[in-house]
Image (cartoon, rainbow, N blue to C red; front, side):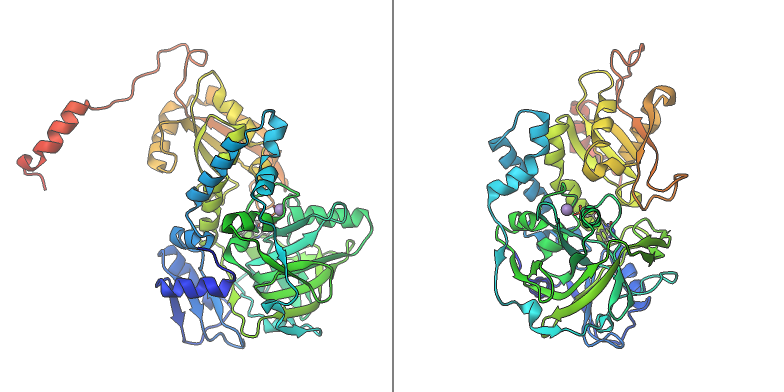
Length: 478
Ligand SMILES: Cc1cc2nc3c(=O)[nH]c(=O)nc-3n(C[C@H](O)[C@H](O)[C@H](O)COP(=O)(O)O)c2cc1C
Ligand SMILES: [Mn+2]
């Protein structure tokens, strides 16, 4: 099962009883946030707000707000996508480490499901050459937000150097009828395209997509290596190429089935204050200077809906997208870190603050080797804290992890404190974008790591477990 458009996905969710329609009039300022926050935290349904004050278009939130709906969005559970990747890896196992790093692009090439050009598209049914962003019912999410933000945008850009396309999800602050912020952080692919234009002293074109098929929306959030077109990845997930159409005023192609397309350009020298914005971490990210996007044209479907998300104190909708990434990328990480059994990025850590990994250890300091490998890998480089446990520990069970971490760690030996880049959203370090990191080795210590005999874990014998199970009713314990 795969979907052509966001509305097709929404219709399916509704048939499956996964949508609540709200016909009471609501405000896009704060009210939709408070409703969505309550529903997401209660593991509730997607929300279709039919009447939003001052808007011609309905607003939809929380479509990705559960494991079940993310699996529906991707056409199958993330674990199954991981298995498909894993089977391709075993088919084509490369030798050296550099080959392994290039594995994902090669797998996507192997799958051969590129986007398909079309000449007319639903996303261009209505064309506004005198654009006015106030037609878009963007949310003001939290009281101290600087204004209205497009919170589920897909930003399309093209490298001026090699022509590769990138699609990244970077929030868009609306300044006025035809200008917005462009919040691509320093480590992101869109930002690196921007630097390429700046070096070439060229104006940069970009398109902001709202909607599109749900696999492509997910792909825009996925930490793909630079140079990989997110549309190849969503084509791979869907098993079907994404249809794209040429923009009206700029030289870029965008998903034909989008709800809205905002076309425009950026001047490499221009900056403007962006934020504050209530962010994934549960804290406001501060106002900072970011590039400015000038809108040249807005196109949309005849009857578009406006998909939005609300981020804030976790867990929020983005947690479920990130958990899909945790599953899908595991086999790829394993090509470089073969001892990796499982990984948990707890939602409270906003994904860059904490990673819990389980490993099969066979030599001293292997946990430290794994930590350093992860700190050198894609967006994992920003991970502030890595906790390593043995392969028999369930990393998804925080009680089990705490038990091992509290009991197995000798701080002087088992804490690795190092330094490196940090996520742009980290507010703890003395300076932005860099700071210290800690690795916690909570594995059992082996010869070479300790001079003492490591104690055995307590386990009841199978025989007695069976006996008590069989006799349980005789004991009369309710
Ligand atoms: C709802 C949501 C909002 C996001 N907002 C931003 C943002 O404003 N800026 C940013 O750099 N990354 C943001 N991200 C994370 C990026 O989408 C993610 O790092 C992605 O891998 C970037 O794509 P890229 O690797 O092609 O740059 C957001 C993610 C989600 C799920
Ligand atoms: Mn990318």
